Amino acid sequence: MTMENFERVTIVLAEDDEGHARLTEKNLERAGIRNKIHKCITGSAVIDYICGEGEFAGKPHISDTLILLDLNMPIMDGYQVLEKLKSNEKTKQIPIIVLTTTDDKREIKRCYELGCNIYITKPVDYIGFSNAVRELGLFLSVVKIPNGV
Image (cartoon, rainbow, N blue to C red; front, side, top):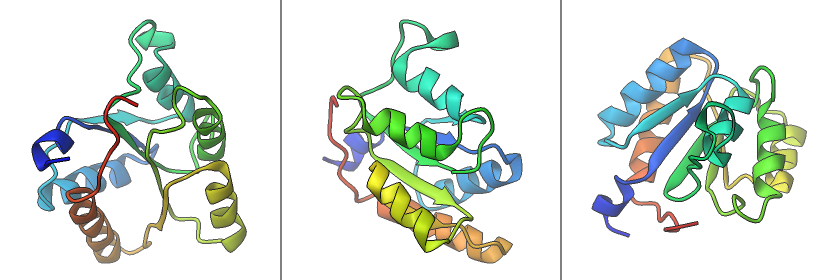
């Protein structure tokens, strides 16, 4: 996949903390990522957007999507989102990168068992967080995403 093809990928940013969301967007941009970013502040909003439910009824966003998923979200947490999307034949190929402050080894193992593709612990300090997201952006600029999942 060329960079041009990757730029067609919509990044679903599942983050309920507005400060973390802004910082993530800003540092992805600094890393050269120009993709459309769709923000969701609840886990159920992620499911609605991806599966074409709720306010997105009839308009699923399954192909050319990558999810940056926080675990600690209201209504439906990241674990539930992972389980629902990875257990569905239509959505299981969507790349999901867990981006969270949780660094407990049991929780990391649980996310991989549920099907996350990458697990990244957000540093708690501003500079560390900024650098981690910028490095994630550099990684995303070379990662291959399956077309038409």
